[in-house]
Image (cartoon, rainbow, N blue to C red; front, side, top):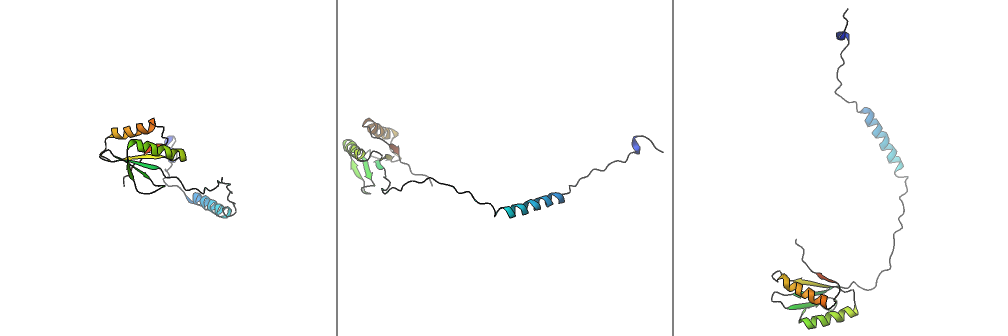
Length: 142
């Protein structure tokens, strides 16, 4: 009879996992969810409501600075055609429009070759004359 450490049976490593019980559990859960899903009532959401406005949205006035420094103004609420204006005429027109409708914005668009200083001069002119809601108009890249 042998005694000592060598008499014990050596255990063999188990390299595989029995997944059958996991599959059984998943199938039971799937059946439970398939049965209970149609029985659940979706919650009713009470969304806020607003009154619809009968007025169309107001388009901004477009102020264009051309390559030669001339100013052109387009009011798409009135017409699609632009007209060339001088600075005094521009301020007079914008103040009149702002008195009639203070929420109407003014957007400045400039040719790519116009110096940035010219755009700043026009923005400064509008700011000095208390023209509200001034922005820059850009064309997105495709």
